[in-house]
Length: 123
Image (cartoon, rainbow, N blue to C red; front, side, top):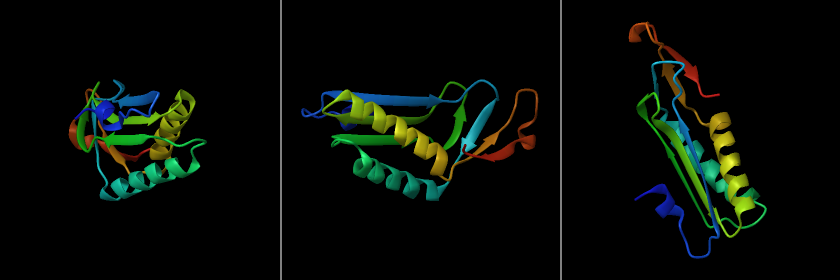
């Protein structure tokens, strides 16, 4: 099932999406944190409570494990009766995941062996 299908509903007049991908400023990254899943669920629940108007459906996919250059690492979709609420909620969710989720990236750069990779917290 696609993320669009996951949030589609007859009551929604808008679906806003965000796809974040790995940039080419390093060779690759690996991300994982089991606690991050619970944090992301809490973010989705909070999005519903703070939205200016009701949201129809929300979906969030985050990549766990290796993520190469150009590959999607996060996908967010929000449907609502009106576009403003969908866009605002989608943007807020992405910002909160970046700020709160316990995701650590092991980045390694072109020309360096993977053994010299460094762990960095999501920011």
